[in-house]
Length: 292
Image (cartoon, rainbow, N blue to C red; front, side):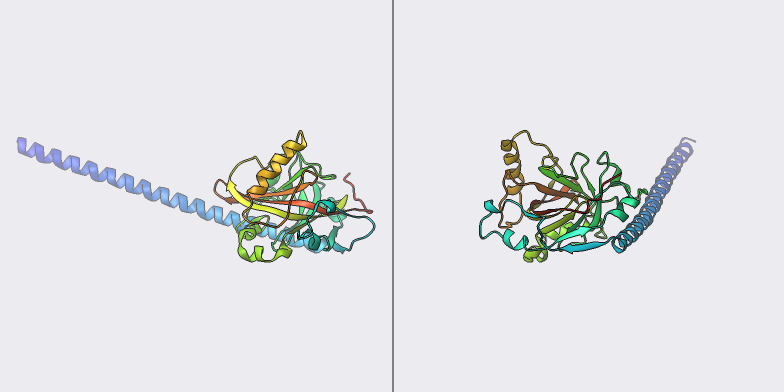
């Protein structure tokens, strides 16, 4: 009798193990299927968001009047007495500015504060600004929810006069929309063409040109996102910090008399890609389009 009981006990234990194995297997399969469904839904959502963004970009470019502006009596060359004769600055200031008609843009979105073009990239977009740095991370130009977001100016910045450091943000999208093509800057093809080292910005108040002097990627930090500086000494230390980080020598200099433009986007998980440029030419607009 004892042997029979032992056999039954062993059989019972064996069946229990099989049941638990089946439960674990079914649970694992359910988890895999759930993750697959989530991935598929995210992929579909990503595709839809990209399609909507691309459609908006095409529509805005098609309906916005962007013209090239030759130098005139209103053109101001910035800090030319401080620039070395061999600095490529002298070639860049010969380039034309762009002038954007903001009437159509402002009628669609009152948050419109500028238009940016970055040579050698896909970046050719209107810039928006609101009361925080969160809204346009998940909203498109038409203010519809969209994971692609939009290119926006830091809420702390003055879009009319520019601060010592004016900051623009944008997602690094895989389809290279928004700031997705900024990664090109770290590739030799972009760096080999010195005509790429220029950023053009048009606002309702003025048209400007900026010369790139530093590009790099680094673990996520906020030390390059300062807008206000209590003294020239503090600003000088800041400029040295970002200047010395550059992954490429652009053959130019920067001083406390310069205003700079900073572009910030993601490079990888917990890493940022950053571009800094200094203001080298500006032109006050005679056809100023003010916000209501």
